[in-house]
Image 1 (cartoon, helix red, strand yellow):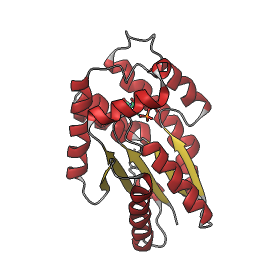
Image 2: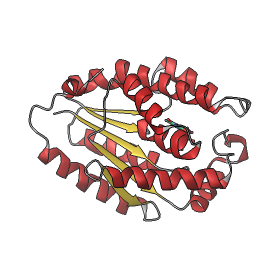
Image 3: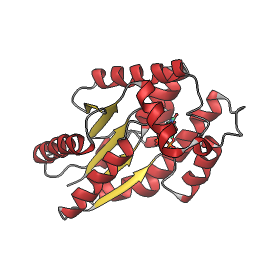
Image 4: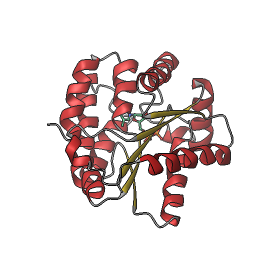
Length: 222
Ligand code: TYD
């Protein structure tokens, strides 16, 4: 049975930890799980990631930025995600297209319809079955990130102004409200174990309600 799960959230929300823990646990249950992340997840995507996150690239335009994120995603979907889903596996992805809507759409103010069009093209219309939003107040997320990585790892995205991060956070909440069947919003201030327990519950429920022969390729519209 194939299942595509994504994790979203602002900087320092702890989503990567939760995504990894979920993938490990699903594997322990004997399921065929692939864990990946964006931007990156393929050799080409990892090179695009270096361009995107380099603190030197302060002159990267918003349009070039969104196309690079989408290029990395297109490579990941075709090379890694779709083949695994087609085999009936589970994919857990740390960030996916909703990051583009939140960061480039709500954050940078790019036109949403254009972003949807580019995203549909890049992903062949592949939408996650389940998306967890790990929500934390902006100040707390940035504080955690700074404490955890040290100033040297402070990348270009995280150096953006607080107002931008506020727009990203509100954007995520709006996206989740628009598609409540797909999104689960969790409070990232809760302890790691408590969050993980809720995530597992939701995944179990989803697995029980998935039609036996879910065929992701039928959703491919482009
Ligand atoms: P990363 O170091 O992976 O951070 P995190 O642990 O928060 O995921 O950096 C990814 C950065 O790229 C993060 O600031 C969010 C941003 N991003 C976008 O702006 N748009 C996108 O489409 C994606 C996938 C990420």
